[in-house]
Amino acid sequence: MINRRLVLGMIAAATTIDASRVAFAKEKEKHHLNGKNLLGENIKKNGKHKIHTTGKKVDVFAEVNNGKVTGVSAAGMQVKKVRSRQKLAETSPGITLASMQLAQADVYYYGYWVYDDFTDTYIWFPADYVIVDSSWVELPA
Image 1 (cartoon, rainbow, N blue to C red):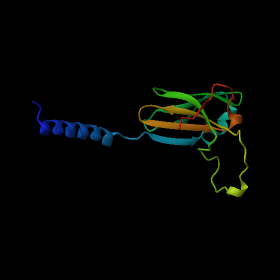
Image 2: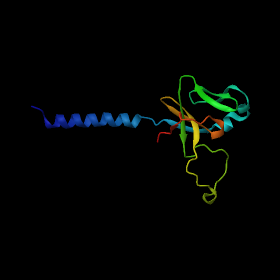
Image 3: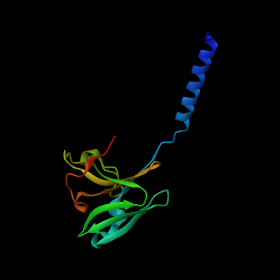
Image 4: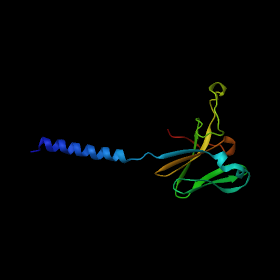
């Protein structure tokens, strides 16, 4: 016969173990960077250019061809092409007054999402720095 105390004790132990897993889970670090500033004058030079180093000391490279970024790579990390209507990396420091902003429905910002199990790094470029085609996907929420 199953004792009520035994059942309640087992439920309490299972709940405690599950709660401890949640408490120790660490949220991924997210970094939004301005690719135009990182690349600088290298946009005029064809080839592979180092633009950033992640927190895990992994170098991030941008491949440039004819004034356009054609790809981003980082050893041991995954890279996806994303776009967003939200401006996530400032192009210039300063304050933009709400009354001065233009309302445009189809303005997209294009970025490369470099990620692994611990970090998410987004490197954003203006539309004229990348080749805009159907391969860009919406940034996950």
